Amino acid sequence: MLQATSSTLQLENLSPFIGTAVHGIDLREPVSDADFAVLRDALNQRSLLLFRGQQIDEGQHVAFSRRFGTLLGHVLTQFLKQQHPEIYVLSNVTEGGKPIGNHKEGWNWHSDLSYKAEPSLGALLYAVEVPPEGGDTLFASMHAAWDALDPAMQQRIRHLKATHSYANYYGKAFADRQPLSDKQRADVPDVQHPLVRTHPETGRLSLYVGQDVVKQIDGLPAEESTALLAELNAHAIDPRFSYRHRWQAGDLLIWDNRSTMHCATPYDDHKYRRVMHRTTVAGDRPF
Ligand code: SIN
Image (tube, rainbow, N blue to C red):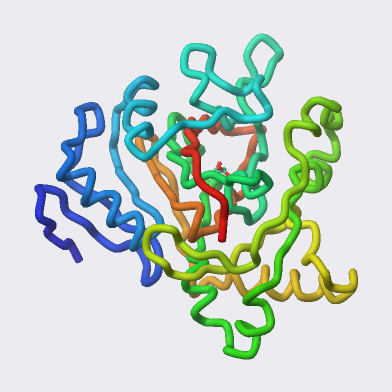
């Protein structure tokens, strides 16, 4: 159902707990402060916004992304656009024998840059070319996941911390590739974050976990940590809390990393091309 707003924008929920489609906006044009306030509020409430049919160029993608905050680069600098290094390319396409983007990025459940001391607030992913089947992205609400935990589990984990590790993620996701260089490893040392985080704008709690990137729950014996992590990761991605996005070229999605996890899904990468442009907004330290 479409909801009218105080501006000319119309909002339509995509699933019970997460995701809202925004209608009545052309992102080639500057967004007014009034409309931007509606978007910011909708993002805080719904964690994921969809803008369909946007014919934006790289500069417009970057300009809109900047409204949400400072933009970050990426440790894999070879996949940043030369003209717009704020844009990180995800793709299976090669040109002149070289990949134009990182392939198989995010084919696990994660919250972007959780391996940094200050993980990203959110990301804006623009679909340039998409396969006719496969290559969907799943999003899950970590507010809903937290709310649905039974009170005994909430109490057990409320003050625990976990170690997030890019090296751990990279080693598992890209075992067939050249290992990270010493410099790359030094750029992304392991970090510790709370297992339950507070949204800095709404005060709501959410579960802060992730597959592969979360190496261990600190202070627990290894076996207990592994078992608890597996249990929480499985709970977090229950389809009840999630939304599956089937991409069309021209879709722009923005998600809030402070209250969601997401996971890209495979496609026939021998047959089809997939080219996605992502900008990443700086965030602050989880608490
Ligand atoms: C990501 O940003 O984690 C990848 C999402 C996607 O390629 O669908």
